[in-house]
Image (cartoon, rainbow, N blue to C red):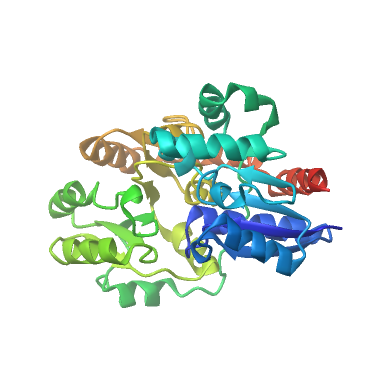
Length: 342
């Protein structure tokens, strides 16, 4: 079995980071030795080449066509690339980055796209690479902490003691601009003044420390919106199960694991209507898509007022994620791809 390097942006609780950990587990379960390495710790392709030489790696995976791909250029071992989301949705708007990503795709043995839509976008820019791009959706496994103390969690968050009739909406994201946690705050605050039973919980790490401070200052000045630090994954899944709905307000997404996990946990999702979210959510069937803060509030009210709509959505969402986001199938795909690096 070849010794593999897995190069990815590994900031805590970001999509690329959790994807990398999952792929590492898939590869190691097949007997590969797989070392995870953070792109933020590599300054240039020559630094990665030195790492490859000293670590005696025979093959590599990169997550993010630009951030990891540019560091794998010219490397003397075979590699494959996994699209990260912002590479195809955002970096592709920059001509200089497009040229770099083109060269990376040319050198890569294969590329992986989470959705058909991402593959089609990449194929518009690099039609010659279409046949080397395979589509593999994110796999999902959830494991809520059965011993999680929900009441203590609410107390620590400063929620009133009488919380039996409260409804919590949770936005799970690393605090950075692309996740746009400000998007719903003002509208939600206005709704909370009208209906004090609704709360928005924003939970996640300060990925961008400067921006995180802006978020903290904003939240201090509003009502009905709470900002909490990241918690262990099993605890987070337990919190999601207790919430009324999971919220996504991102400017751009590759494929949101938080959305898929909510579907698996049978918790409804209200997501901003962007391509990455629309690729996995069918409006009013497996979730709700909104295009403005005001529409978010109206759809949320509809969900509260119509329990049958909520039940239908979570039932169909669970069926969807079970059928299309199999963790076992994802494992087989990456294990087969690893064979192409020999």
